[in-house]
Image 1 (tube, one colour):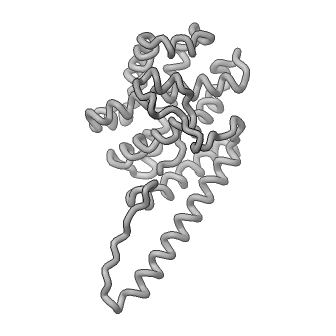
Image 2: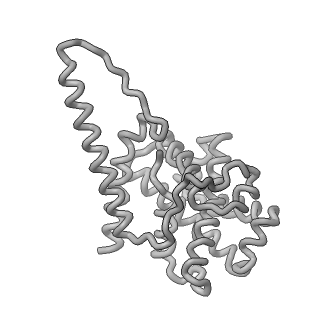
Image 3: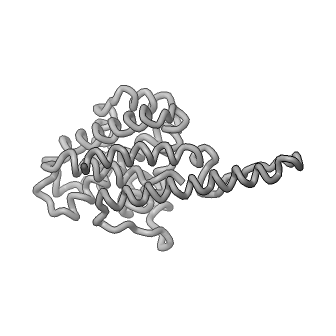
Length: 231
């Protein structure tokens, strides 16, 4: 499973743009940002199914205008989305653009820092579908025509208050777990070397083989960035 990039972007928007939706209470502000971002993630996932090249080029060029316009059009055409964002209607165009800029800038930065490439970016974006189920309200899934993915009881809902220190701790744990996993694999391979046995490593249901290598690199890049922001 890909890590929760949605929460990370939401935190970056709050930190980098403290005046964005400042008229809203903290909890409501967080939810508005999350759902703007959710619509943008859904847009990239849908576009990627048609053309991964288009999405990757959009990220490399940080073409926030195209993403913001597509999101705005979706909101205008969906009554449920219009009703949800009605309290911030006057602030929505600017907020939508700022979130799109932050989202694509962070994706581009991560692509460069961790050398993800098009395949890595594609898998990261697709992996956010699970986190959309965690964060997005029911109206979101209705508005994009996927009501079957409404939040289930067995999906853990994250707390509203997630600070930078907690995120760093979670990513540190992920790095430690991956390091232990790699060490175990190395020891296992050494023990069977003389027996000339070939063992196929089968990916778990929640993580592809690609992300077993990719997650530590992504996590390290995120930790370095958060450390610079906090300290």
